[in-house]
Length: 125
Picture 1: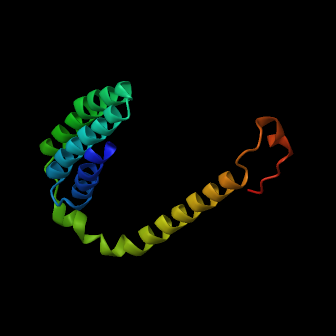
Picture 2: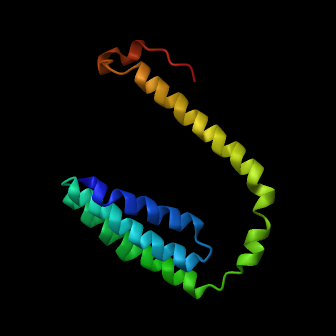
């Protein structure tokens, strides 16, 4: 049933990332929040859906949108440093991905362990 809102949600999230204008990206994010709220409604988590829409769309995104519209951002200057920061960004992203995979493997390894047995586990850091 959540397939009604999930593909549009993925589409709007992609639009947020690829939008060249920050105002358009903020508006796409508002629509993405509404579709995520629809997914929560279909999962029968009405409180989370209403909270998502009221808090994020109603307050945070409206403030963000007004700040972006009030500031006259020079996008050409921001785009100049993109290619010089691409390699460090990919390295940091790869390290974060490796750490998430490592943590997920540890969680699966200790799945089914009782909380009373956790003091016996020695997990190297």
